[in-house]
Length: 408
Image 1: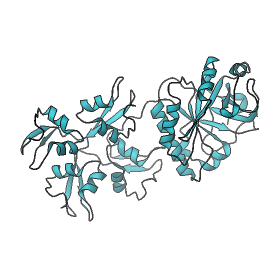
Image 2 (image 1 turned 60 degrees about the vertical axis):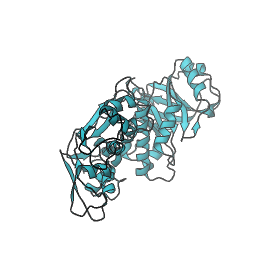
Image 3 (image 1 turned 180 degrees about the vertical axis):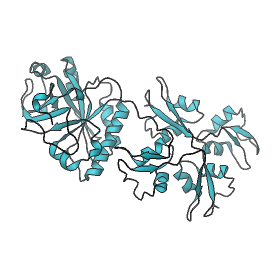
Image 4 (image 1 turned 180 degrees about the horizontal axis):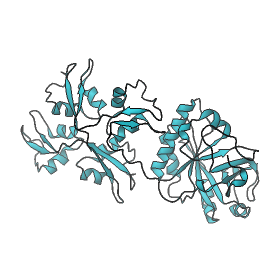
């Protein structure tokens, strides 16, 4: 790895342990970059966060923030907490994941949790990320799934960090935790950084949905549920057709079958229920009963071939000024439905360039059957009876009749 002397920018990383800091003194001592601790877990925000930020900016320093990761807390919850606490701040450096404890997790689990956190931070903030850890921890507790992210490495009293099996270069090198800088009482961490630590000001573009194909090759950071979401299906369905006994265990390079085509079918097996099959395919038993002319949803039999639907996946790329409810209205659905199929926890937080799944299928009309209600039909198609009443000019939603053709 590069040596200390090859670093381009002098930096420090700080937290409440440093107390009050004279940032003018630090700048006069040659400091150019300051990383400020923002959060830990989903419960602690550094009390000096805002004061440090304002003072660093007032002295013209380049600012980054780091989050101390706790492996016993949901990664997405931690990412949300981190991004919420730095919202509205001007940031020049990559957002850092500080991973130093495994909390009893094995390397595979811990590394996948780190990836989940990093992906969520990128999604929520639109900014690049970096992994901070120390050499021994990287050698024994992390896996190559993290190699796609740049490294900020800690290794003291050496001219260059020792090798590790994941990274062969660094963008940040913390070479001392007993350094002295003007304006700071006591010891502080000293760093050198390369250009790669800096943001270019352009949000990380979201990964577009893949083109229709018959197989998918797993990439670092993938989960079965995220792959299922890309293809408008469910992880249960992918696990079934790929004979995966443990849906949490997939690996980079693994080739998964993704069944595509104009018409999906499913052959009923012993023990199947219509609701269980519907769950596998991300639909409802009412919809399956409707398109298969099943009058009794409790009566299906082994060997029966069910039509599942079509695979034409609709997506929409968010534009500036869009709202989830506005997009839902354009496609005749609800914001709740879009939030659900896109795993959006905050419906008020979407961003330009984000690719949303709208739904599958080419169904645009529905013929009313005996016993149907407008609310029941709406539920089948993930919309509301109010919307169906409006687009079909129905003044009395309780009055529909068999044979009536409704726009969906």
